[in-house]
Length: 235
Image 1: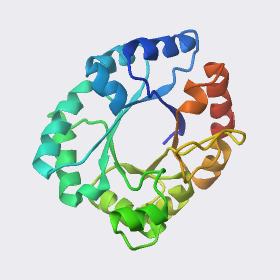
Image 2 (image 1 turned 30 degrees about the horizontal axis):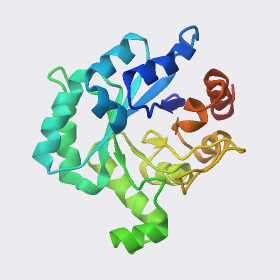
Image 3 (image 1 turned 90 degrees about the vertical axis):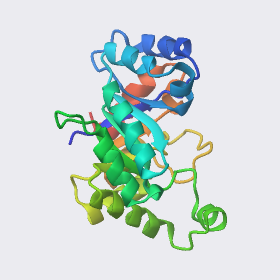
Image 4 (image 1 turned 135 degrees about the horizontal axis):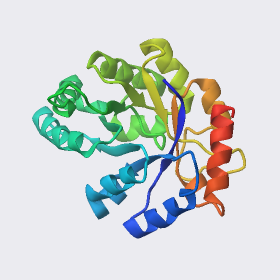
């Protein structure tokens, strides 16, 4: 699996998104984009079609979590949007993940990649224990959720870059690690807790890194994207 940088397009309107994407209209490399809840809820499924028409791959980051049958039906709707990756919460149990995979698979057998969120990169071990009452080490929880995702037939997980190599050790090199929590060495951490740089994420075994504000809020987004690609892919 080829590594790549995914830009988190955390905008609240089509106008803001398209203004951002116009920066890349003359770029040969069309960035892989993450469409999250904010943008998807503001603009609806049509925004996915417009982005695809511009030649971008899409990670649809809605983090589904509900009873298995509800998630299965929702995934059957998402499968028609022609996204490349979508996700759910691993905490929804193996039965939910298995149902989601069934719903996502089209009649011809094709489907987007499906990955599971383990623990958010904004979650510290202290918060996990105090707020969620999960009294196990964070690494152990992430590995357990990753193992469940693999057992359920999923393609990978969302985790911190700090855990990517450990996930590969447990689940194999072909099991994808998609890792937010990436900042440039001189950047602000913001609301993230478990973070590292693009170069360090590559070293730790991330397959995809998800980068938002360091690119979307940069004075020169194209230059910031190129820097991120260079550091992560070593190009």
